[in-house]
Image (cartoon, rainbow, N blue to C red; front, side, top):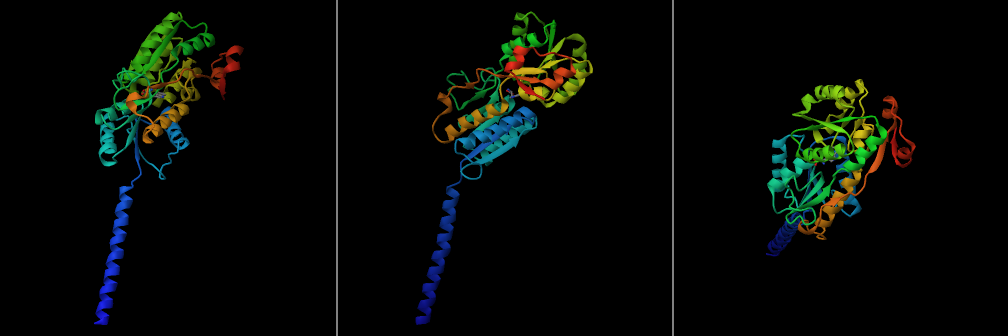
Length: 329
Ligand code: TRP
């Protein structure tokens, strides 16, 4: 009898222990970390910098991957169908609480997938013409974030100072990129105001870039490049072709100057990411909502000069420009 009772007591204790183990586990599942889904359009130096900045911006605001947040990162490799599938994965499988889209096509893919989960825009040229928000000041829906609209006026002013003899500028971009169309229209206007004649060269895909740049070098005095992902991804090809005829390139961002452009007035790509990360952190923490958070734009850019490239093409940088510029060797 006694033995049996003891057995029953032990059995009850064991069952209780096993049971409590499972309950604990279940609670552990309940307390899953919030998930941030990040979709990057493609890899090129500028977008890679932006993603690094995003991670830093999140950390600065208390969110560390693996500790109190899970970051689910996807790269669409410039493939529209991948962008669609990855957006669905982030929403349905990863159950992202907040999403970030880096570059216009990625943000659009996310926006087509959810109208309820908050989406933070990572460096979108013009959120309104991309159909992402109704209004920069009051986005209204589930989307807010950072625009990297370029200081086009300052860029052409710099071009005039560095290349005063130029008469014709050629603008190189990809016809598939809506974000570029917006900036190309503005660049046309600004360049004409500054007395330049403008020729535009839209490539259907990256396959035509080398040949198009060859044509450009015989028709224009310098090449201007907007924040176009396709061109940024093939910047080395552009530089190699342009170098053959010593045709200078004025791009829109620091990373493209580093790769062989002459100079620009540009927004720091890393800082764009930091700001994007901060806005995502505020939404995760419940401090802000996309609908009432204005799109963040940068008022000024840094003057950046590639001295080595300038030397190579025999371009002298005036002292007043040099004194305020960041020099890349
Ligand atoms: N603004 C671009 C877009 O909306 C993305 C972008 C950010 C970019 N920085 C860049 C493109 C630098 C080319 C170069 O898609």
